[in-house]
Image (cartoon, rainbow, N blue to C red; front, side, top):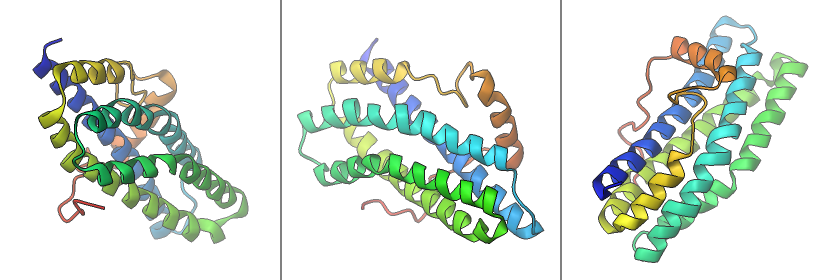
Length: 203
């Protein structure tokens, strides 16, 4: 793969996976707003599927590959933005704990009734804002730096690693168990724009 092809593929893949996560987060926010406005419980199976998706794909595949390939190679090539990489890697390490918390509070909400609605809605909002700021750092700082300093061999390695990711939600051939989730999400909210103006550029 030529360097420019590898860059375009890898950067496009990373951005596409960010859009997938953003769509799920916006869908979760939308469900909780609907529940609050209508005074009734949300679609709990759909919420569970969304939490499962975030755990199964971004947390288990996307973030580890950013750490093991993109961030590692950047550290080998330059000391620039080392503090930003430190912050991002630390946030990745917190991901599993945040997912477990979402799962636990969602279970309390589903089994314990509407008294837990506010707690779960607040957790979803905090989780979404956390990851949108995280992705903003990656797209506004890390990817431009990578395009400037990484070698052709680096980009081929990154492209090969991310090329093995088959996003079960928005990939070319979504796994059957996620097809219904995709249909629900696109019905809930239009295609997301997650790089909102006003996001902080640095931690």
